[in-house]
Amino acid sequence: MENETLRSLRALTSAYLDRVAELERNRKFPEGLFGIKGGPKDDPCHERYAEDARALLTAFAASKPGSEDAAAVLRELFSAAEANRDAQCAYWMLIAVQGLGLPLVEALTPADAAALCGAYRKQYPRRMRLPVQDEILKRLQKAAG
Image (tube, rainbow, N blue to C red):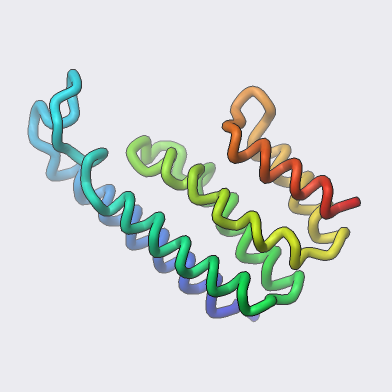
């Protein structure tokens, strides 16, 4: 059964991606081009998404979730960026918020951490990883034992 935080995270991410798509559709030439201010990348929806994700994940981590629930939320958090790679304006924020899931790694059993670690490695090869992703992988490896 799906936990409430997982449903909330999916809804939050979906609403964020819908907003970014709307901004892209309504972009006026030359917003965002050649360093000109405005356009989808300057909209406050990105910060709002990060703040809402932080609040959601912080509250979830404080509730001391079980390994299965924590793993499900982390899988969702980790897969959102790759599933939306074409949404250039949102992709980098989806990568950045992955770091908000680090406190949940502590709730994982070694088996769940190992499974997530393997999947994460395949999803984000070394040549494509950013520092936050290296830290995630490091913590997953440690939790896996």
